[in-house]
Structures are given as C-alpha cells and as structure tokens.
Image (cartoon, rainbow, N blue to C red; front, top):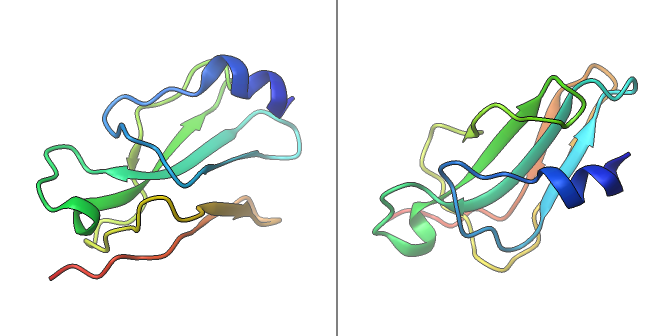
Length: 104
C-alpha cells in the first residue's frame, strides 16, 4: 500500500523544501495514513534554526490529506540533509525522530 501511496499522494501545502527524508505510516487497517518531514517553516528567515517538523494526516487511506501542521509548536530548528524518521506505536501515536538545530 505505501509504495502506491508514495507515488501519488505526497502533498505539501505550506512547508516546502523537504530534505533529509520523511516518514510514511498508517494504522493496521490502512485507514489513517501519516506523513512527517522537516522543512523550512513558512516565512523562515533563520535558515536551519527556522525549520520545523510537519505532519499531515489522511483519514481516506492516503487518497487526500489534511493540510500539514507543525508537529511541535516550540521552535526547535532542524538540521538540513540529516535523516528524518518516524514510528507509529501500537496505540496509533506517531513519533518523529530528527536532529534539532538549536535556535539562537
């Protein structure tokens, strides 16, 4: 399912400039699909310190997605080009793993 999903449905509404990878995962039934990635926040003028982690959710098996939202509201920054990963636990919670870039 994820291979077909990736080819057709990765969509960014606000946070462009994905680098370092992304995470795509869903619930066991395949109804809820999540994408997480790090990218510059809209209006970013602070390079890596102005990047953030974003998440988009589909409740339609990946056919369409809600607009992405910041996964973390606190400014953390994110290093460009470094690996981004994620995991979904058995309760359905999604966790993003990335290397934060300290804000100054």
